[in-house]
Image (tube, rainbow over all chains, first blue to last red):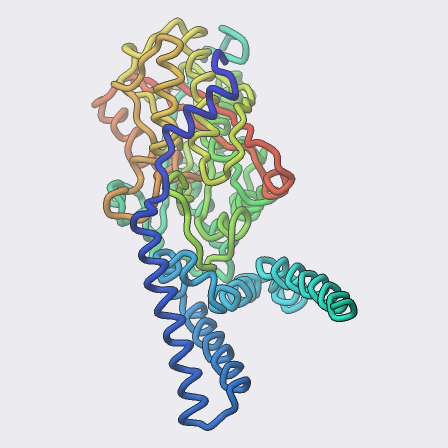
Length: 149
Length: 333
């Protein structure tokens, strides 16, 4: 090859079209914003209409959003929404729910143990692991800070 | 049969006797949809798993091909077949019922070219009376092996390609009209591309290398061909192929086609840079190119199968994507 890796990297970058961010950003903002509005609406509903405490109302909101995502994922509709929404569906709790439900459905063919059980957290696993780890580090810093300040 | 260059061979008298292909729903809705022998509207093809569905595709393509050849499976000495699934299970599971001695092939999306080359070598040399070259791929089985679960919601960049659900089979025997005249096996090339969402870019250097080596061995030039078909570089890879070859002073853009750009209509179908997968070039060859040769609308074709040779493990370990391309020249006598 008369082209070096460096030269080819430049050629590849030039030939590969960028993601249409002028479309992706507004769509992520709108759909993500809508999900957040729905979340707030649900919290208000659980708090004001059902009469839950705010902490409980928020937990109910998370459960409801996870439930809706699970159903949409099972029906195969979630990926159509996410294709347009991008980070708009990934960042809210919907993204986490989809990341757990989709492999659970997909790997059913490998059985309950090695399929659903083992593969359910194949995408969301790192979030759980590093989320827990970050909470642990934060806890230590908090503990030290409380001692000295 | 004789060696005409490093890993290049000229065949004496061997041809493609019959060919058949099957496709999925989306392939059926594409520009070649009506030309595909059989379309499976059901993604599972009546099976329980995506993997079994893919086995069904290759079985169906091979059976249809045998039927069209007028022979029975007992008349074929070998079947060369491969796919993208781990350990090539789509082929080995799918072809059990045919009872033809099988040699498994792996060349990623170049498998149709490598299996056709081997079938031609075995048949022309007299090692086989007749043989079959086949391959398959399935969108869903590839997604779950190489990428994410089907229902996972994510976005793909415009350079990504969609794996074709389809399979193709070609029956090879001595004599005949659709002559396989030459073949060149490819060198594995790594030009530093590591983005699994840009396989066209990873494969273009391999295609360029093999095409140039083939021209050199056969002493031919782009003008000698009615069509040079690569499978499957998509839009990004095709553009890069022209650029790489222009640097060598060769312009193939006037005769070049790419299977990944022919199987889907990129304006209407959501496939980003085009189609990919072993089944893509196999389906395009069997549905479009070989019938055109058969009708003598085109006379001389260079089929260049291109494959990105990564695995999920190699990608996760941060390796580049090495690629290979194999060329098979077919002309109508």
